[in-house]
Length: 290
Image 1 (cartoon, rainbow, N blue to C red):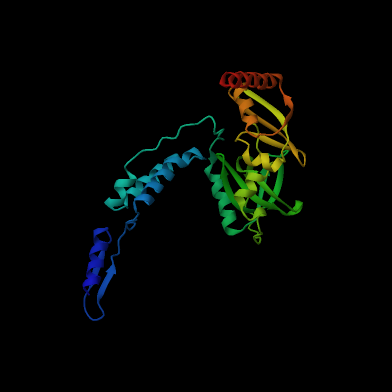
Image 2 (cartoon, helix red, strand yellow):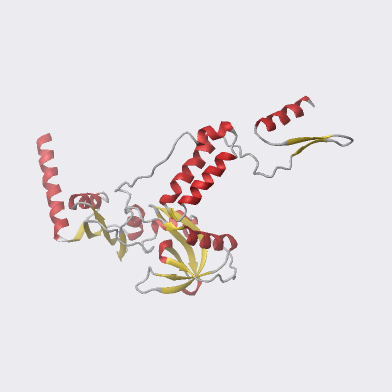
């Protein structure tokens, strides 16, 4: 009985309303509180919740105010020991130019497609990732965020193929209400599938300098390691064209060299000159180091 009373005291210290019930068969019960009961987080969980709600506007648009309200509400129902960790800091997100981020996605589109995934409902959507806008029938399986971009992993029944598609190029139509049976995602992992799919609807980011080259590596390999804001096109089974941008021609040349593969058909001339300049600088640097 002493252990029970100690547990009851602990719950009351955390803010739960515990009522004593007298008489035969009496005991204790949770009070009929009209507010949300306290949410008990440990230190790491409190920090995780605070970080998530403060940074989510960087990848979802139209959600900043709701995220701030959610964080305020969560803090209100946290016991003091958890709240002190959640209120210990404010997070400000700044752009890093090496991230090549996309614009935040519309939160309503994520809600609609996420709901279809959860209910296993077929989706009809207009898609602008093709040469011409088209309407697709899709079995949505997973959402993946990679390189600050949202992707849908879906099976397209009428084409009998799996797709990795940019969410910001999809416009869902009215819900179909039709269900489907989940399939096994290629590679057994939606993240691996998105990263190794080169025709996922990406377009080159707008940068002062933009160029391309044929890279002597298979398209799925280059797609996995290409920076956000670049595109990969299949050429042969052992080569592909990589198009990407940067704030300087030297920066663009450096990005191409990170693939450690033969480069041919390099365009434009400014990119070829930047590669020559880098070669000269490297040769001179190595000469002085001898």
